[in-house]
Length: 81
Image (cartoon, rainbow, N blue to C red; front, side, top):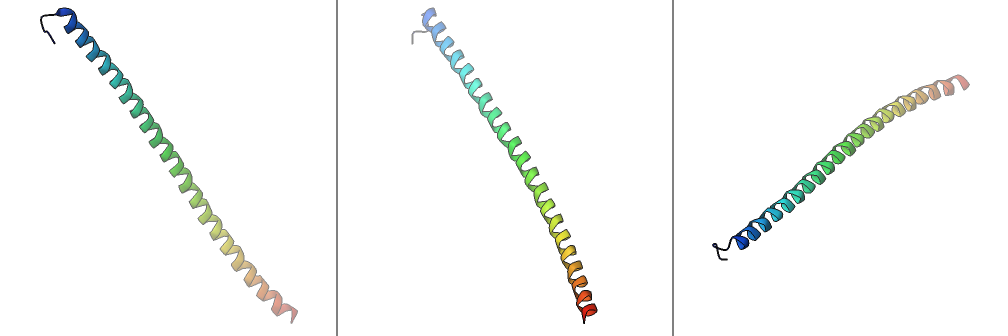
């Protein structure tokens, strides 16, 4: 490149500026996509944690009810004899 040719230098600098602008847009898009993915991941993880906690709670309730029925069943069997 001839550094004394001002039009060539201007065109070269313009190309660099355009390329930098495009790279900035690509970076911003990639960061936005990454942020959205992470936020979605956190939301889904929170939902899964809440669901697992609810399942554990329901399993405890089932265990209590089952234990209560077993005790009542034993009493009914004694009463019927």
